[in-house]
Length: 261
Image: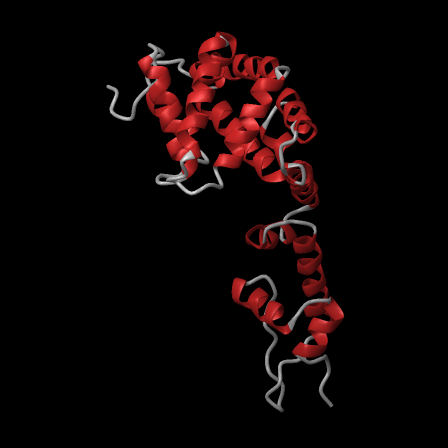
């Protein structure tokens, strides 16, 4: 009568799959028993013990490439290696906790990428009459502004915070957001552009929202990225922005152009 158990039974006893057992054999972590007279490999107590040891160490986070040397080490080396494994596991746990924290913050996307001051500004927008789409567009625009011109971002926020205290500015901004849904050739666009430009010229402190991001020698390109966000070429929004900038330019306000050197 054959002694020992089959590979399937050995895998079940050790808490692993048959595929894992064969992988341990291939890596040399567990000796492959000889076949019995029936042609089956029978796993005895020594092989089962080794399977359990490998599975336990691997489950504790020891890389399989290190398991063999660890099992063959003396007590002192084994203890030292376990300390190192614990250190690495602690580092991995800390990294996973940090990732979980980031994922939770991503549930509130604005707070992940913007300071609380900017988030507070966005949270005021619904109360000023802006819809979810306008708030989302403003959030993404602020994220771009912060990333591309970080040295002027706090100043930019200050200008916006000041401007939204003016009901006329808020009303014009809402109409500008609404205009983005119009047809590009809508006859109302030139009049609205003129009204917006005139408001900026009459209120220089509000004009800084447009000009304040011009910070560094390479800011022309950076400004254009922020400026063009949400105003795709050929849309009403793009035409409105272009007309406002043209009128400001005629009044002597410097606005970076795409072909500026």
